[in-house]
Length: 274
Image (cartoon, rainbow, N blue to C red; front, side, top):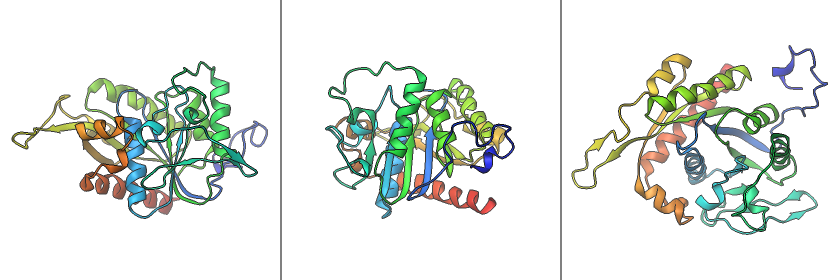
């Protein structure tokens, strides 16, 4: 039984499995209250950065109705299974293990029109019935919002923490606060916030400018007392490589270092506090 359940009157009788890590050292959820902030791209970039540091990495694509991870990492085909469960695909360059609903469909362009309980059950299968093997890190790419899919992940997986993704617009910050409050309600450590598309760099003069207006990320920092993990640029190269399924080839070492170092450091900080 999870320690988060100890004060509940239905502890042990709610039907939820006990949280576990299986053979995974660290599990990180990446999410946002709002769509369109580059959450899946960030999940993929975080996985790539961790893998480039010599870690064994997997990505569980929990965005059942809008999966993006296979496309970003250039993974195609239908997943197979063996006596140990479903076998995740591995990315071409770094061998990042991936499981996504698109790898189970005969036509990945068909919509998944399911109600919440079905979505929750598929995510449960992606964790329990996939042969992930031994991993240093599992990154869980969540859909936007605070409904069934994020709730299932937070209740079922023994998360080391949640990375909150936002963009500079004030509207994004207002919606993202819902996800931050959800982590508090479910006792999931909030590792910090990443502001995506924070700025752009002029290809002619090299100066940076705020294409979506001034940053509001410090508002989240102040309100929830969490660190700003990174402020990432709006880089056309990310979109270009992602569309081609070659995001592993993105070479911005400063971005990887900023992102992965801060995430790893805050996982260590959370574990020390516990």
